[in-house]
Length: 395
Image (cartoon, rainbow, N blue to C red):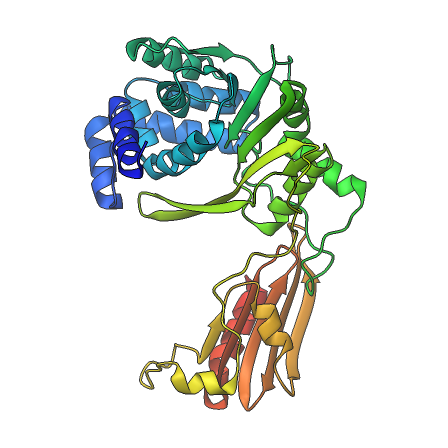
């Protein structure tokens, strides 16, 4: 199928689910208010809060609620681009698999897409939300799909039936979205300790230990897993990769970061992994930060950077990426004026430093969850960075 034909087919499929594309938050929320009652919105908001604070039962109740015929198209329209980006990537990798499992299939939006495009492949969608499975079964019957079935199953309680040449897990393995991951050894490095304890604790907290073991147990010899999770941040990506690697799962293609929009909000997820146990030609797992958009600092670049002398809030140089560490390390004749290193309430080590270098004043901030920031201004504007220094320490 051509790229244009696939594009049209994806949009047509989402339309059959009642999903609409929005590029404006104002337009989306106006449609949301028109489609849902105040009672619906209040119930949804309360359930979102319980899901955030609660346990697995609250999470299942949230997905049961969002699978209702009124709420489903409205809520899932926010993820319109997610379905496009993930759907086309997975479709191109199903290949000649005879049996495919879609783990954590939810209401089956993508599972039914795969089944429509691969009529000779048998698909099984599994989810622990009864409401989501009921919605998936209803839509599959409406679409006349005979090569897909759905099961309500909690893999943390019971094993999967059968074996599959391909298993898909997208936004299904790492459910603890607020988990910060594993910190680096200290604020000067992006490296993580190799000890087993923190890794095992991360796997237990996020639930990926049991889930991964169940999926691998259902994988046919020579089978592969297609995985896409909310693990873009290095502190989550590294332990997630280690969880895959320590179970013998190897990359059979380079990982791919994926960017899409939740209406106006940009989401950077992934990486998109395709892995296989004991693959003979594998790509190495990489625990370094991704290449970023930060520019190295040098005096010559200041001449070419547009600067409005009337706007005293704009720095001469600013870098919010991991590469800010390299820029900071490369500053010549650094003289520290003030600095503080401390342990924050969430466990991260924070370092904040105010100093001078190369005839300028700089502020550098770093922590063990991979955040870096370097700002440089002229000496005449040092007060701006002094205020920011105090603000960071006070927050």
